Length: 364
Image (cartoon, rainbow, N blue to C red; front, top):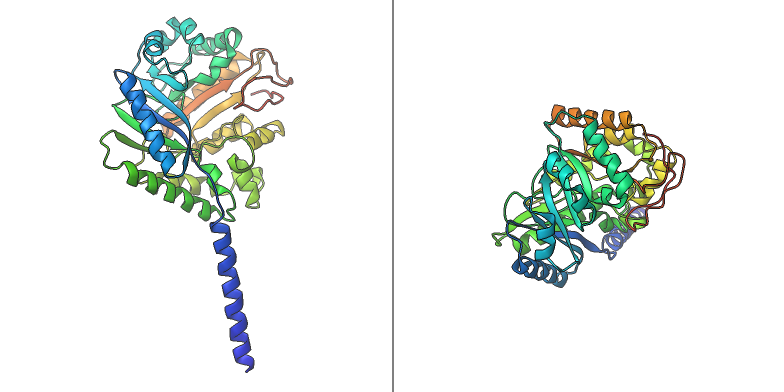
């Protein structure tokens, strides 16, 4: 009888564990698409119609679609904006030469278009720094729409790194929100896998479907913050930096994506993940730690604040270092600094940008 009692107790405990586990995994969570991006050599209203059709298809499957984007191959910014008058569509001209970026920067300043410059094989000098400083002084809000890239893959839907290679569309999620209610890293990773498979099954027969960019793409606080999720698992951000957690995430998103395209890496946007911005202000996300994490699993320096009095030599050193690391390890990296055009080191920013958390600026 005693033995039977133990057995019943064991069964009861096991049943309770299963029920609790099921309860956690079945908690509702949002499946957010950060962006659907169409790549077109000759942008037209047909491309916009396609974007809205894709949005409708995803929404019927329970996905929330945040933005629609279109990238054309090095097209004239003014012509692109004249062709696409729907100003809810975010626009990009992909990768342009540094010469063209410099020659057309006034047009860029007054546009709603993103672009990037590839420095993978360039001899980096103060001209590249002065381009950033000039933007910081003349139109700092456009720093959000510009990045220097190194070994940049094509067809990522994420701006401003997006670059045209061939006609078609790619999809990028905001997958950290799917971590809501998760009590383990594996549980969140499996939810991402389910979402990727669902999207792939929807579009795998569409010849224009380029693939899914499985970047982590955090945003804001709470369920959207990757740092917040790590802390909910019991790690401090500083502790996690020397664990294998980040590498494990990147390995998963690179190997389990059924149709990968683009960056497929760990995004650590300093000021878009508001809890990461808190770590920055606390001195826990220095440029050195940013590059350390980028080297093992990340995508580079992203929405990282700089003061208007930052030493240009320091900016030059960082650009050269990122180029060296990218080429040495053959991995995609980028540098996107942001400034409000007024704040010096030690001052608090005022970006007036809903996607960027205001912080007290630290020296690079």
